[in-house]
Every structure is written in C-alpha cells, then in structure tokens.
Length: 259
Figure 1 (cartoon, rainbow, N blue to C red):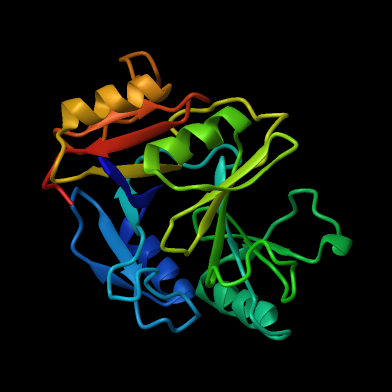
Figure 2: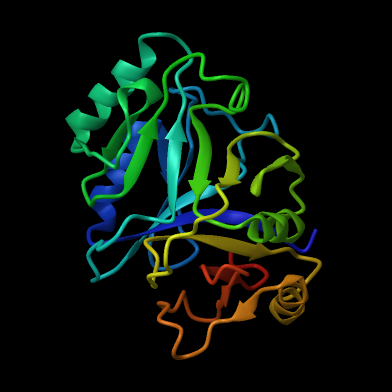
C-alpha cells in the first residue's frame, strides 16, 4: 500500500493543554511527533483501545499542532466514544468534565441517548451509551470518527487508504482498517459549507516503497487536488503536501521516512 493514515490532527491554540486533555480522556500516551506538534498513540488500553494489529503500533495517532485561529464553527469531524457497560457513559462524561470539557447543545434530543461535549477548545465529542447497536461493536473506546461528507468522499477514502467499506447505504458510508479499530463514517447530504482551515484533518504517511510525488499523483487520480494558494488552508510541515479531498476538505501527505 502506498499510504496509511498516520494521524488525525487537531489544530490547537494550546497544543500542550489539548494533548493532556485527550491523553487523559482516552488513556493514550505521548510519543515523538513527525512535525511541529505533539502526538499521542494508544497506551495501556486503559479505556478499551488496543493496537488493532495486536502489537504496540496503533492504526493512527492523534496530533496536536499549533494554530492562532480560534474555533468559529462546528467541526466536520468528531469522535464518537463508546461505552462497554451501563455505567461507562456516565464515567466517561464525568472524566471529561473533570478534565475541562463542557456540555453543549447541538440539537440532540434525550431520546437519542448520547451526550455531546466540547473539549477545552470547543471541539465536539459524543459519548454513546452502552448497547448502541452493532455498528461500533468491538471497535474500542474511540468507536468512530463521524464526518460531514458525501458518499463520493467515503469511496475516495476507501480507495486512498485501502480500507474496505463497512457501510454503504442511503448515501452514508463508513470504512475501517482491515486490522480493525476506529471506523470513519460520512453522513451524506446535506453537507455543511466548507470553512477552511478545518480544525481537524488527516495526515497520511507515504510508505517506504513509494515517494511523495508518486503518492500525490495517485491521490489526484482518485479525485483529490493539490491545495492552491487561495484555498484557505494552513500549510503542513515543511516538505509535506497539502491536498483537498473530493468534498474540498484538506489533508496532508508526509514524504517517505517522515513518520
């Protein structure tokens, strides 16, 4: 495979504080970062996340990179955290609040059952109750990354990452690594307007048997475009490519050997 999902990256006013929040909320551990930010990966499985390949290497990291732009609109991506037993939802919410999260109203109803929180910089996160169907069964605590996006963009990311579609119905799509772990799903229309730069984006790592130019060419053939100077995106680390997926959401591609 020519590329892999290296990280889900948050732009943060205070990367160190945000890293502490997410590390303690998820039970992840800090690791060296390939760029100018801070990075976390699955730790000791405190809250049910394990490395999908059975070893000590997770499917992706979280990165927190510096930004001077405060959050101004709802994110196009947010985590859905699962609960493995009836009291875990309340325990997770209490832990998040203790760490600096707050309850927010995005139009959810009591009947939906999930709790919507915002982290200390306003990034949304849902905490789901136990027994919430089979879609997120055995995905771990970080059950899903729920994204605003079209059916076409779900198919693009399936091809880009070589992750199979695990849901494809009514213009909604979802993919998952063949090793298991977090699912990434796109809710279909109507789509929110693009407000770039987005607070969250994907960082892709080019594999050792490829190179950055070849990978950019492959992703372009699948439907991505290079982000131009007027696209409103924020540059990634030096030497990385910034691209837009078919919905116009930015992502970064790292050269071989940067991860």
